[in-house]
Image (cartoon, rainbow, N blue to C red):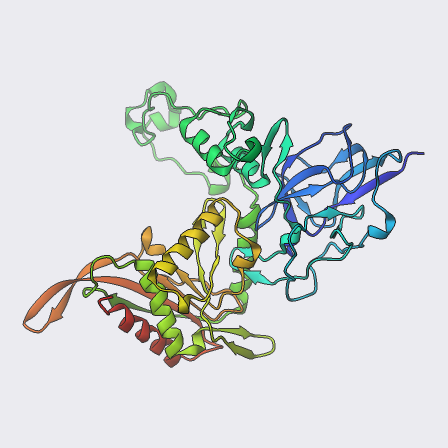
Length: 460
């Protein structure tokens, strides 16, 4: 009788309970060899290629593109072919499928990649388990690079990274019609974005959204033909409106990837933190031309952290312990269509203005193309949200443990300011400081905010 092997979805290094299918590289009935790409899965951190744990015929595949698969459940089933290469039994790790129990992650060596065991676990080239749980961060979970297969594989004759394939699907780009500009013809993220912008490689299945002549706006109901209205409506009598559960026109959409994890993280933070927010306006009237807003905010946070270390800290609510940090690593909130990322600006307290700008640009670019290393998405000591670049004045930003403070900067504006001899119009930046009142006092938070205001008031 043929040897059938179920393959369980392994913990993809994120410490998350599930992952979303992005693209199958095989179909039922195909023969696949050991370690060939089986499927790409999207987690809160990245798009990860999962290789085949055996050589043989594909019997079943769990779900289709966009389906969420629970870690530890059956991902695929194979009929093992003994005539093809198989993994030695001694290489099987028995890696578990639930959230790991550790508290840190081990830095992987170069060349590590995912190798799946036939129980669904992952092993390194030497058969050693590579990671432990890394803990929660804003909008993402830290993972070891050991679970990221960063090789561009050829599927359907097209070479592209998993994240590039996922982006192409979101943008409706047919990769087979995109000319790759990377080494050996690899299609890059920039290639996909250019194709999406100029419309030169629209996917055949992605029917264009109707872009015909604009139709009459729904609000122009009085001008509609009477034949398009119900008898009751045409009579002009009052009508009872339906409840939202009846009149809703949209369809429920399951959260996936980054948004799915963001929902979990925010709910957990809401349950565990005792937040309090202070707000004030930073007067930047004295600024000399050329000041970078983000750079000045980062510098002000560093100055305040030096003056009041209590907010540049971690707090363990279970053990009631506080850790003050000598360095300032600022988590910079980056908003994307996929959800919220918070990469860490390391050692911000020793960077000059140019260094801050270059580092922020690098982090944003890596977030946009989903190439940011896992190590950059955790371990920051305080957070910054510059939502004012879009809109809004004050906010109550969410603190995610173990950090105890987050600074939010609103949209700058001019206001009338009293001065000796009259009034002047001064440019101000609204600031909101949310802090965990378990870990620091209101006085400490107020002094921290005052130190920021003083630094931002300087000309340069």
